[in-house]
Amino acid sequence: MIYVTHKAHFLMRSTFIFVSVFLYIMTAGYAQQTITENTGLVKWLDLKTAQELNKTQPKPMLIDVYTDWCGWCKHMMKTTFSNEGIANYINNYFYPVRFNAETMDTVEFLDKKYINKNIGNRSPNELAIILLEGKLSYPTIVFYNNNYKFKMLAPGYLSPKDIEPMLVFTVEYIFNTTSAQDFSKYFFKAFYPDSGFVSKDTITWMKSFNEAVEKNKVQKKKTLLFINTDWCNGGKTMLRSTFNNSIVTNYINDNFHAVAMDARSMDTITFNNQTYHNTADNKGFHPFLHMVMGERIVLPSILFFDEDMTFISQVGQYLTPESLYPVLVFFTENRYKNQKWDDFIKEYQEKKK
Image (tube, rainbow, N blue to C red; front, top):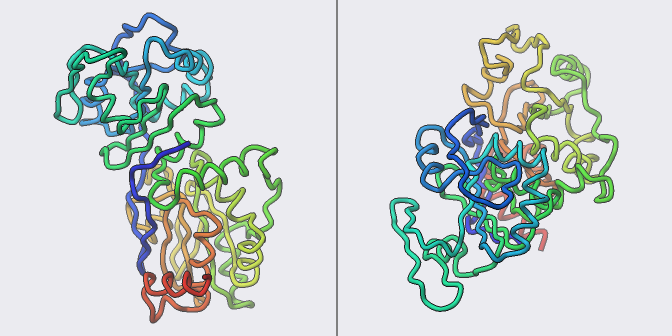
């Protein structure tokens, strides 16, 4: 069971702006290990070091709350945290911390100090009670984003398959648009064949934005430009599950010229009599995208253009099929011209009831 203590919601206005996620690679600063048992392949930090590093190089934090007597904690260390792929992802994109829930040390977290009052058997440190919100279950993994405003608890043993979508969910800020449960469901559909993976995209994707421009000269439609890269797992999940939902697929094929574009594409794009060439000067992102989206490229994103190839709006970050469909309707039916998104989605949801 996953507990999310951040109320994630999707707020869309005429122009969609989300904070871009930059995935940092940690190269130094890991504390020396003092834990005697097997610590897996994860390069664990103490809590103080992780907080200090986050001040200068912000990254999400993963806290493994354990006890010395917890058998499942040790098993998770020997399996999940010893999985090379999982460990590498955690080491690259998180500050990983092991925290003994029953430590007698005085610990400091977010400028507050916590002690163990040593009352009764297996007395927990006060911080363990705060981190686990009074539900003292071990192991529990606590996920924080880099400003500590998002928090998610994942109690119990987690296999590599279990923890994988949670890691992506936190790193790629998917909690801004989607619940952890929904993302895990579609992540499994996208990446695991036994969970309903659709092997071939059914959207009629055009090869390039230029092709959509030319096609639009003979068949007027709105254009949907999906932007992603090979390292964005939220975007991969959208391609393999959201865009393979039959209702979404049919609606897009009927109403849009659809283009899937790598944000680092080397294609030359001609738009409004301007030609855009990609160079390394834009950190690999295509200058056409910078022209449309500004300096901060949010991935994944969908860019919408009207029948005259005029840019309408950007929808940033991961969306489920259920979240994407009303967005498509909002633009297809030209509701964006005279109706606010909040009013539209309220009306849409009332009709569904």
